[in-house]
Length: 242
Figure 1 (cartoon, one colour):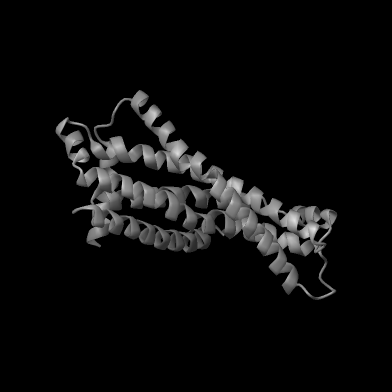
Figure 2 (tube, rainbow, N blue to C red):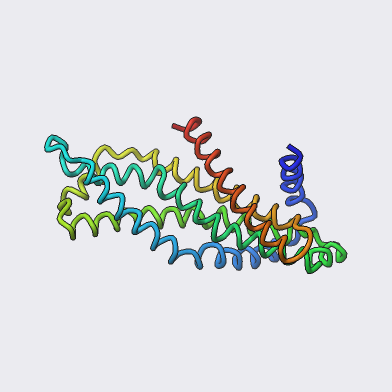
């Protein structure tokens, strides 16, 4: 509970003694490139293979002749939108982006760069952390949309090229009994996960003490805690919104 209280106080300091909007505009754009643009290839690659594997395994389990083939893509669509794109990719996002944020701030802490900002009268949490959180909230939903599209495309390619399902059945299954709210639910989860991962990772890195070894420990703790927060948040959001 002590750590949670410190985390809440840390979030409170983000909004006091802020810099000018022009300063944040530049910092947020730089963080968007680091957080979002440099993660596109990894997200596209992983989600494409996840969609392909999901299609193959779903087809393997639907062995009854009474089940139409288009149910394969229907199952892939629901799994991708509800869980694979927002939640599974959040774990990868925590490992790549979260550890990077924590390590960056941890290095700045042990080299006394954060102390130098405080001496100059700059709110270091607002200057260093707030742009990272805003960039994460902006970019992670976009990465989730990309992941969903790549997963469905990967399933289409594997399903049609291997003869598991025809292109017509696959597209029909994607459109069959489609509930638009599932997309809204996925985007809500992506906003929450983007905030949780970035804020927790920055919190762990900002309060790093010691030397280079402690920076690595802080990065590991950031990923572990972020993953736990994502899984708990996933359950709570499912209970509240579904």
